[in-house]
Image 1 (spheres, rainbow, N blue to C red):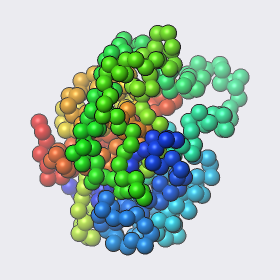
Image 2: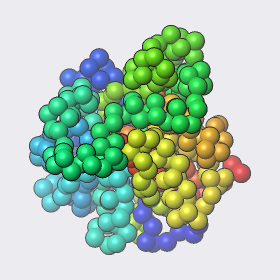
Image 3: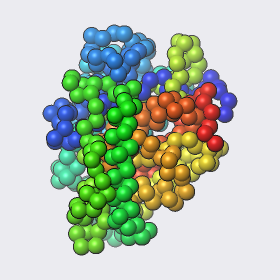
Image 4: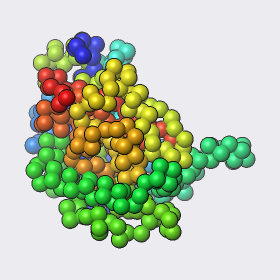
Length: 404
């Protein structure tokens, strides 16, 4: 792939620590505070070693250069459009920088980045920020439908089975995948335990330090359990099918608080400003799947994104696939015949957590840091999406050789 001035490039990518909902280090902070931290941090020259305060002006680029911000979020109330605009202004972005929110369920953070990338590609803007944020402490998942039930004509919807399948709880969709594709409990627990071990090792080696901007005294992810084993996980009871189920709290993603942000611009703009290019945005795809087995989304989204980039699965050096559940992540890896050593090398959402609106952006941050650290060339981010979809993006780090 040759470079072009029309390419969309990423020049900075940062995230907060990911912390357990209700019990973790960020539980008392509203999502606006998490968002403001990364919006300010992504503009700094050295975010991990800088204090994310509005009076820190050691900028990579001037805040006034940012033309638009798009924020992925799932659980916050509609007033988030206001609180997030307030967060941007408090982060030091001027009122001339516009802001929007987007909600594509678990891929919202990635969709936000894609929205900014597409705006740059079509010439609407030259510089923008794609971000994602979720406080599952402040806005718990179980309250979503209680407070905001779908506004539909139920008699009409009940005549369409797939429409009603959009209401199937996520854990039940995981059980549906397990039963349909004959996934056994032991395999899922082993997958989950390995996620914790990989994340624990990465944390002990300091791998996440380059991607995390601290918030106060909170400077690292707090959901990783280094002592977790498949045997210990096997003792947990299934949650969604208590008699014959295989999906447990231990082999599902954690409820988590966090935020992430990515600074994008045209290659021409980056070259004009003499900025380092962390990665190049190559392609993006979203594909629909049956809502009742929504977890298989990556099986369709990854090949679609790769086709748009004229690549195959074997051309990719690193995959970051969201571990919403061990069922869907394991099945996606097996079905696409991916090399497991290339997937989630530092663990995934089972160990690190899945703050819904943040995850897509967080995966991009983690992927770029991993590829640059390990001198890898091509990477893919992907996740399943509630109501039956999958999303994927292809990124490239220039000057690196493929491991093939």
